[in-house]
Length: 116
Image (cartoon, rainbow, N blue to C red; front, side, top):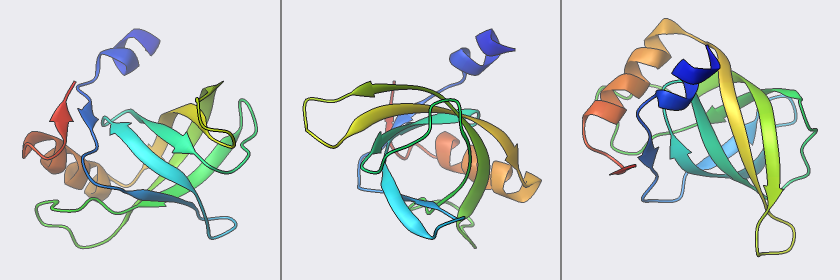
């Protein structure tokens, strides 16, 4: 399972995309890269190691975009960046509506973002 997660096609995010913690309705950071199984977040808020989160983000230029994407996510790891107050944070998606997964797949396939 973890091997499949790490092999998912990723796209680097070209434009700023804020990520909101839906439990607190606060921005916790910006997307750095994204796949259909997880994301790398540049976090600007403190996060709990190994925590479970409900997150929301909007993908600009997503085909058939009708709503933000909301995911249940597990924080797998964190590492400090060179900027004080920021961390690289790796999340694995654990829940997502099928319609939102299809929206994410369309975005990944449409060439938005930079291939990694």
